[in-house]
Amino acid sequence: VRAREPAADRARGLVERMAAGDRAALEELYTRESAALFAYVRLFTAERELAEEIVQDTFVAVWRGASGFAGRASVRSWLFAIARRRAADALRRPRLRVVPEDAAAFAELPSSAPSPEDLAIAAATRQELKDALGRMNPIHREALELTFAYGLSYQELAEVLGIPLGTVKSRLNHAKRALRVLMADAADEAERTDR
Amino acid sequence: MTIERDPSEWPRLRRAPSDADEHVRDLLPSYVNGTLEPVEFGRVSEHLARCAGCRAALRSWEAIGTAVRSSAVASAGVRDRLLDRVMGEIEPTASAEMASVPTSRPSPSSLPPLPATDDDPEGAFAAPQSIAAIPFGLEPLAADWHPEPPEKGWPLIAEVVAAAIVLLIVVGVFLVYR
Image 1 (cartoon, rainbow over the protein chains, first blue to last red):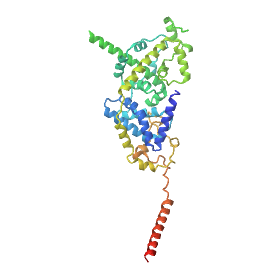
Image 2 (cartoon, rainbow over the protein chains, first blue to last red):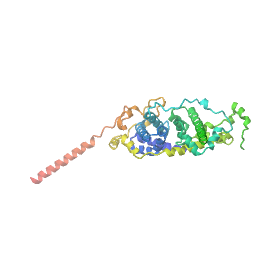
Image 3 (cartoon, rainbow over the protein chains, first blue to last red):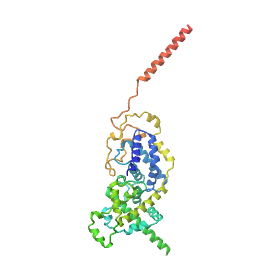
Image 4 (cartoon, rainbow over the protein chains, first blue to last red):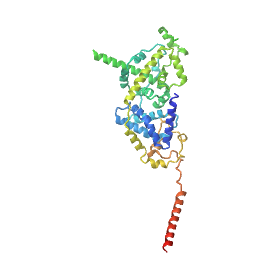
């Protein structure tokens, strides 16, 4: 957590400079974050041109909204939240939503024994996992990518996704469970093909 | 020493897990990505040392994290020209406009709070409507903010000096050729 603080302070400084009209600060922020934002937006659209437009719109919105950045959230979660809304606008969907999640329905009973789901995922090859990720619902994959590819904390995830902290945890667990189901489906498919 | 629970104890643990057996699976993604607070990190590490179930969950999250990172990197990559498009859109006449921005511009923290929306209850992520509606993004950000008036004194002095020099030249020429 502490290692992230200098980078976070630097990013806040960039936004403050942008608020004062410093274009070089925008260029630096673009250099730091555009690849991550682009990869994130590609979760929602396979069209490269559209993804580029969304990223472009995001940085323009960031420039124009820099003065309104209050610093309550991290710069990164602010960027992702704007990109998410721009993606939703571009895709003409009012909001990016997953099926209603009931945290209680996915809560695991406490157990000191390894679950079959965990054992199967841990034993899977990286390619098996990547194949399953490629078929995953974008909303579940979004939660996994924001966590592991972009290193967002639970609080930052809640801010980007616009959901409570408890739902962040259940969404991640839901995503893991969906991953396991997709892996099992792929195994069944392969078995049918072999017959 | 690591103590593994006997599977026959599962039902009892499910009914009434003690504090010592409070599992940490919900925290494992943030444990893996390094965003867990130090105090929580210590508690999770301690629990992992004695809980095979949570260790298995940790290994599954680590595998997922590795796969996600390798997938995300493979799809990354933005064309450089996109930066040119962004810079071109924000402000075509940036140098002239920026030169007129006074240093007394209000800081972000002094601005009024932004309107709240459904997915942004504190308004932290909302772009101010007044900004979005005005081109170039260098407009005044508060209703009572105005640019400093341009200095008048220096150009007036310059004009007087120039007039005096011209007058001296004319008088000199007149005296020479008289």
